[in-house]
Amino acid sequence: MRKKMLDWMLLLFVVPLLLLNMTLKSAGSQPPFKSSLLAQAKAAVKSVSAADVKAAIDKKEKAIYLDVRTAEAYESGHLPGAINLPNRILKSKISGLIPDKNTKIYVYCLEIRLSPLATKTLNDLGYKNAVLMDATLEDWIKAGYPMER
Image (cartoon, rainbow, N blue to C red; front, side):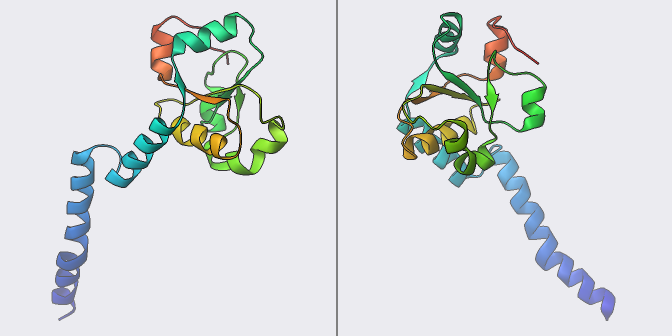
């Protein structure tokens, strides 16, 4: 009796979960609602290229280069002069780190997944000069641009 009940539980609960997981994986790495939010955020913010960010660094433009990845990812390599503020604590820490809302902020992450949302959050908080670097770190490195550790 107990074995039959376990078999039914497996059939009713575990199998649908496995099918859902397989469906999400085949649909891409992000669930549809998350990719939709990402697309909306990206469309709502100003973007610049990696070349634009490199030019700003070369000109020593008065700006903040904001890496919104985890501290561990940041320590593995980041843009020259960048500061780290992980996306998950951005809202609670940004005003202490960058009190002047007119500051130019170039926002980036590894694969352009966190940075559009972070840039939109910054814009919503009044940081109107926060812009998205619309390039991956791989693009940055392939272009031969420098990294710091």
